[in-house]
Amino acid sequence: MGKLTKESKEMASFAYKALNSSGSVVKGELSAGDRGEALRQLDRKGLQPVSLTMDGSVKPKAAPKKSAKPASTRRGKAEVKEKTKPVRQKAKAKEKKDEEEDVPTGPIKLKGADIVLFTEELSDMLSAGLQLEPALKAMENRQELGNLKVVSSRIRELVRDGNSFSSALKRVSPSFGPLYCSLAAAGEASGALDTILEAQANYLKTLADLKGRIILALIYPCFLIIAGIGVGFIFVTQLIPQLTTLLAATPGAEMPLAAVFLMGVTAFLKKWWLVMLLTLVSGLIFFKAWKDNPKNQPTWDRVKLTLPLVGRVVESRFYVQFLETMANLVGNGLPLLRSLELTRDATQNLHLRDKLEDMIEMVGDGRSLSASMMRVQAFSPLLIDMVTVGEQTGQIDKALRKAATRFDKELDSALQRIMALIMPTILLIMALLIGTMAYLMITAIFNTMQKMGGR
Image 1 (spheres, rainbow, N blue to C red):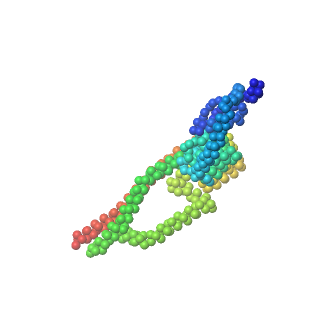
Image 2: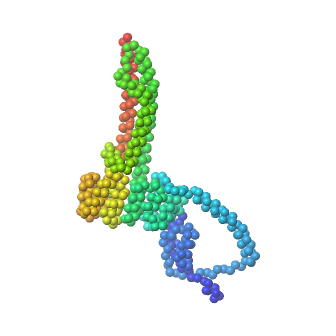
């Protein structure tokens, strides 16, 4: 009896909060000899611990029961277990090999929808109070995320090894892009990673929605363009040559000057179309090579700001991103200079990045943010006035956020105007082309009929 008491061990009661395989938060209690054993029990249950606290109550651990079965029975079971052990090991090895074959190696490319889903899921978990590693672990255990499970697992391993979240993103998948990684670094530095990710998710959804609307808006015009090209091809290759032959066989008939010009253009295209096509392709390749050259990128980024319609959209998008990032960083306690540096790193337009670099130098020399914005001449007067009011009231983060909301509405209006202009413009161009060719043919036929009637 004394020996049984000595072998008995007191067990503590632990209260836990953990994530199950579906990502839901579960709570409960368990008994264990120490904290390590409690964590192992949670792991065997497939739970990822979020918090584990000992409530102080102690329970005696029951002594192990002695087996009442004869030794021969135990030996028989042991022999069966030993015989089936290699079979189980082979099955587990095969299962593990199949899983490893399904897991992609190297950098993983993700679709736009996958990045949006990853950002939303992670932002929601961080906003709910989870730390970064448990949140990534919960996403890793999800069943329906596909490649995102592998991405979450690799990012979690890198973060656990001491890497920053932004650097882990760069190493795991190139699909996140420099802007995404820079914003993630800004969120880590400010302690507002959940807010930054939420804003980025909204931005990515806006882009996806815009692309979807553009595709839908271009479906009908594309059909019109294809139909117009087909009609023009028939006019040029069939109808106009037949009309020319008819007029040539008709005494006194004359081809209208516009029709003669059109036939000359047609003959030129038939003779030189391959050269023109190769010239066009070569020009596009040269332009892309010039644009992608790091030395020419600032010039191209500056030109994009001056393009009709597109320039306004690029400028408004920069305003919204600049204001939202600055508002999140300053609102979470980062110094103004550090916030500007992180915002500069998150800016993709190199021309505007140079402007922010000048602002950083001015703010470092003691100038106010509004004065620096005014001197670089890259911001609208309305935006500068709103920032000035925020500086005077001591609530610059709220002023920046309010300005971001205002310019976001302007950006949406600019995009809607572009969408509204696409279809009428294409319709007008096609109407002019088809109408011009039809008019030339009808005029030529009418003139021929007059000549024949006059004779």
